[in-house]
Length: 104
Image (cartoon, rainbow, N blue to C red; front, side):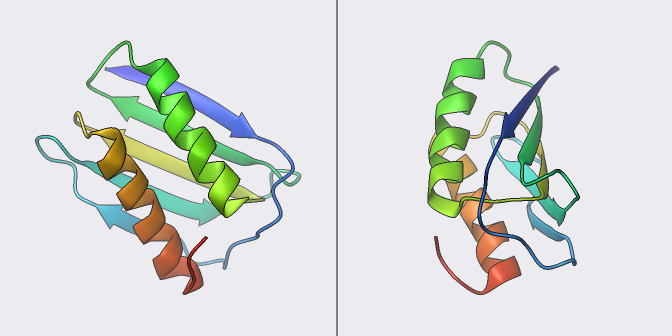
């Protein structure tokens, strides 16, 4: 297992207080937990993954996600079992759409 941590500063969109879970950890998939947190306008993302050595790909996918959503004061936890970048983006968007009722 590898744990990766990312922090994105200066987001604009704050989330409702209720946390949101999206996806299921199983072969080739992942789960995403999104929650509001006091982080001085930042968004933090922690990934626990079985696929080691993919930090630059995670950084690119999460950077794209943050540019689209511009989250502030948000904490995201991802448990991954080898999901593709497209599935990661899908699960993140699903969680945020369920929380906000909107799209990026």
